[in-house]
Length: 334
Ligand code: NAD
Ligand code: LMR
Image (cartoon, protein in one colour):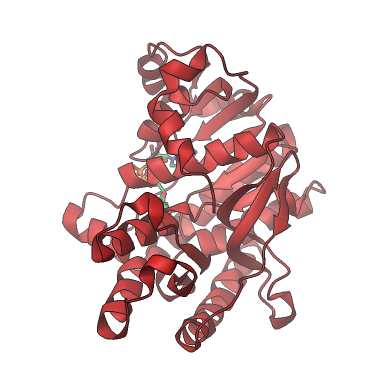
């Protein structure tokens, strides 16, 4: 399972900042938003970050000025709307929380966000084609195929370097299971596979020993809560957007794992929605599962492992949904 210690390192960044080798130049696209701002803050605390470029069509210089006063050694720079290419110049990791959050379903924001991701991916493919691209923008299930096709058309596609960030599902699954069994979430890591929306999110609780006694209705409710956890936040925010703080945390944790993989650390495993061979034969080119990170990105895609009959049923529904989401992404570019 991916390292929980990343979170602890983030929390004590001051302590680490003087001794750790800072090695990665990071660009955040959408840095002025609800996710972008706290994510930029957390990236400023990450001991692996050397340079932090913050870009948005609104407000990035302000966020950059604010974050830049934090006393860690990374350099922060903000970029105005017409400076996208400058913001991407030299990037090794690009994190994208740009776009609109949903009001109803994740699909209601499809066309706006598809245009945003297409345009940002086009610029990234031109200016920083070797950078690792981490897509947070929803619907992730369709945005990753869109960015991938843009890179393909630009002749620079490396499937190992484009990631859909599905980390929040794993964070939720672990937290929700821990609450039921009365454990510390550190001891209830959960593998979540499939995609990032509703029934495409498939938590594999059977692979977490602590979930042994969680069965029947309690189990079904738990799976539903993980699949529709985003709805809880959307409803509670009552029209003011979707999850931002928990997503910033999940995004920073994902980025931290990527930085460690790039630096050559072995055994760094995270969940991510990537180009995947797992169900390619069934026409599903992208799939989230546990992936092993290295200097070249997603260097190994782990198989799902053993599933219960119930999990197989969830997986079936997931595949139907994913296939449509992927096709919708490709169709947008045609
Ligand atoms: P937000 O509206 O608060 O922020 C989005 C930011 O993107 C804004 O500052 C906006 O100016 C900027 N933006 C829009 N178009 C841009 C462009 N072309 N270039 C650069 N910046 C641009 O929204 P948010 O709450 O931060 O959510 C952002 C996205 O993340 C949404 O699509 C949301 O659905 C998604 N999200 C994903 C997950 C996940 O698990 N992957 C979780 C939560 C939210
Ligand atoms: C989430 O899971 O919280 C995000 O995908 C935002 C949303 O639209 O629910």
